[in-house]
Image 1 (cartoon, rainbow, N blue to C red):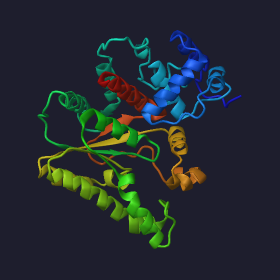
Image 2 (spheres, rainbow, N blue to C red):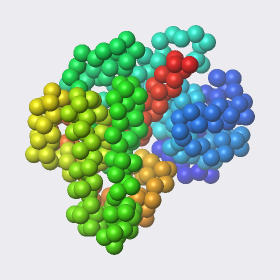
Image 3 (cartoon, helix red, strand yellow):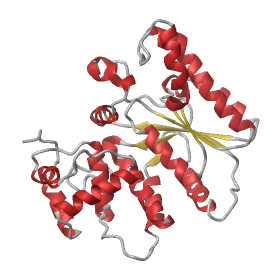
Image 4 (cartoon, one colour):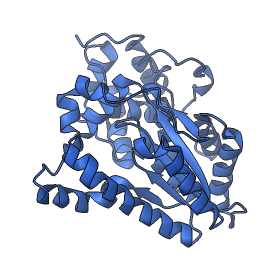
Length: 336
C-alpha cells in the first residue's frame, strides 16, 4: 500500500472518472495526450497505474496530480488528493465535461487562477489582477493603455515560480526572462574554470564569485527591455534581491525613470510540495539539495517576504499551479 497522506481519498478519482463516462483505458489515453500538450511527464499512464491510484495502492506524484486536475477539470481537494487550504473554495470548481460549443469557461478559468495572487503587504492585488486580465484580452483587440511593467517572480526552489511566470507570459504576451536557461551556458563553464562542480549552487565559490555575475547578466536583459519600453516577466529565486530594500528601490527608481512599473511577486509554498517539485524535475543543480534536504531547509526561511510592497501567490500544495494549468488548457481549447 502507498504511504497514507492526510486527507487522501483515492475513491474520489474513480468517482470522477465514472462521472465523465471513461474507462481506465480511455482515462489513461487522455492523460497521456494532456500531459504531452502541457509538457508534463506521466510515466506509464496505463490502466494498472490508474487503478493503483484509484484504490490507494499508490499516491500520484505532482505531474500525475496536475494532469488529473486537467482531465477532470477539478482541484486537488475535490479529487481527494488532500484537504482544502483555509479559504480555498472547492465546491464551485466542480465542472461537467466540456461542451462542444465555447461558453466562456476560458475567461472563468483565467479569472479563477488569478485570484491566487494576493496582497503580500501594501500592493493592490485586485487592480493588478485586472491589469493582467486586460493585457490578456487586449492581445486580441489591440493596444494596452498601461505603462510597461517588470514582473519579478521569486521564491525558493520548487515553489512553482517558473510555471507561474509562464502562465503570466501566456496571458499577457509579455516576454519571459528565465534566469536558469539564460545564464546556465555561462555559469556552468565559469564554475568549472574556477575549479568547482558545474552544478554547484551552494558553495562559497558560487555565492561570492558566480552568483553576482549571474544576476547582473539577468538584469542587463531586463534593463534592455526597460529601455525599449517592453514589459517583462522575470523569474529567478531573487532571495537576496527581493529582501534587499536598497536593491529593490534602485530597480524601482531605474524603471520609473523609463516610465516602467515594477511588480514583485513572491511564490509561497510548503516544504513537502517544494520537495516533490524539486524531485520531479530531476535537475542536476538540485542534487545537493535533495541529498541534504534537512540541511538545505536550515538555510531557508519560509516566512521570508520581499522588503517592498509586493504580491503573494499561495502555491501551498500546488494549488495555484493547478489552477494555472486549467486556465492554459481552456485558452488552448478556445484557440483551436
